[in-house]
Length: 357
Ligand SMILES: *[C@@H]1O[C@H](CO)[C@@H](O)[C@H](O)[C@H]1NC(C)=O
Ligand SMILES: *[C@@H]1O[C@H](CO)[C@@H](O)[C@H](O)[C@H]1NC(C)=O
Ligand SMILES: *[C@@H]1O[C@H](CO)[C@@H](O)[C@H](O)[C@H]1NC(C)=O
Ligand SMILES: *[C@@H]1O[C@H](CO)[C@@H](O)[C@H](O)[C@H]1NC(C)=O
Ligand SMILES: *[C@@H]1O[C@H](CO)[C@@H](O)[C@H](O)[C@H]1NC(C)=O
Ligand SMILES: *[C@@H]1O[C@H](CO)[C@@H](O)[C@H](O)[C@H]1NC(C)=O
Image (cartoon, rainbow, N blue to C red; front, side, top):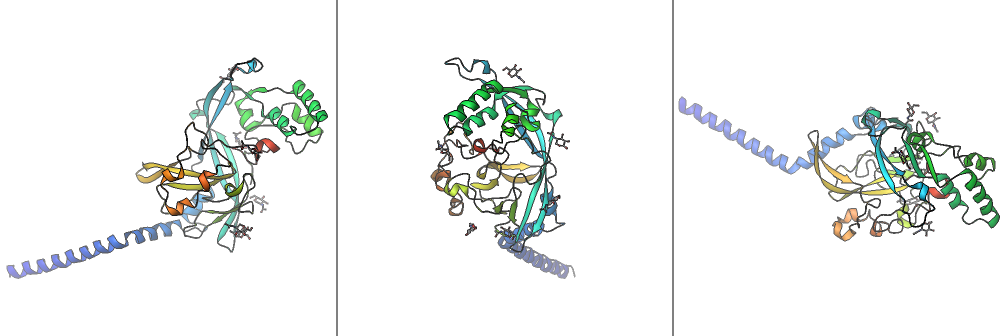
């Protein structure tokens, strides 16, 4: 009897072992597919799904850190050989709440929407407070001078006289006015009276953005669960912009919330209305956030950071990712060190809110 039971146990163990082995092989072969399947189900994008609610309002809000540069020797502007000195102050911390509004589902597998944005100052976590007095370059007089640079002698003279009596090169204002509340330089009112183009009553880097709706444009995003998921299809009804030249005007990359399901370790692309262009974020390292493994990407190369950019060949891009890079990273719009040419944008038409790098 004892021998017989041992035999059964052996059979059971054998069958169990074999099936576990088969399961193992099955998982080994299909793990990727199963993994993708689970993710796809979780990422299904429709009203009420988890990805939809995370997308429709960002919660928790985004942290936005702003640094201001205080011009500490502006009184020496007319002295020959004196370099301007700037002292970096910050961060002034804000919370940005983005809510999707005017959500429209289109028949071409895209969803259209706009943003309502609210900013809240995070006083307790900020190292600086909004009542700081900051001296900075006066963007108002600078813009006006730039705008009339090709005008006739008389216009230039007239503007020059009014600028020197009403405005100055430097301006001292509180941080809150420079950022969100805006300030009236005195000259703005006069220019408005003279109907000098489309000019607002106040100037502030983020003036008018708090509580605004659709200020960063009208988005159109692919939502089908494929390799285009979350990719921007068009922005303001077009698939190119006219801020730059050539390929740099392409509207491509993530609309901001979703990234490829299997991201590569070289780069991801994001479209940023604030930059008026897409930005390539480069892979840095693997990180673990609250127990979840992820890849970390950086935007450090978008602007001049004092370093010479690595070139395409050194980036060792996969052929797919290579298509995302126009020739040498859009040298037309930015030099090797990623200096951005603002001429074609904000300074020309006073519309920092339209395009605000
Ligand atoms: C900014 O610089 C000015 C001098 O130009 C100084 O009076 C002011 O206190 C500085 N502001 C802050 C917040 O440090
Ligand atoms: C967009 O949504 C806002 C409020 O949610 C509404 O007032 C406005 O009329 C909508 N605009 C369009 C074009 O549907
Ligand atoms: C933005 O507007 C909201 C609501 O009107 C207000 O509570 C908040 O303080 C404003 N934020 C800033 C930075 O002014
Ligand atoms: C999809 O359709 C919407 C509405 O007709 C349109 O605004 C959008 O540009 C279209 N997107 C693409 C990629 O064709
Ligand atoms: C961009 O739009 C134009 C017409 O509006 C169309 O011919 C072209 O194929 C589009 N390009 C892409 C990449 O979708
Ligand atoms: C910057 O852009 C403007 C307008 O597109 C152009 O006239 C100017 O030559 C550019 N400057 C440089 C240094 O490329």
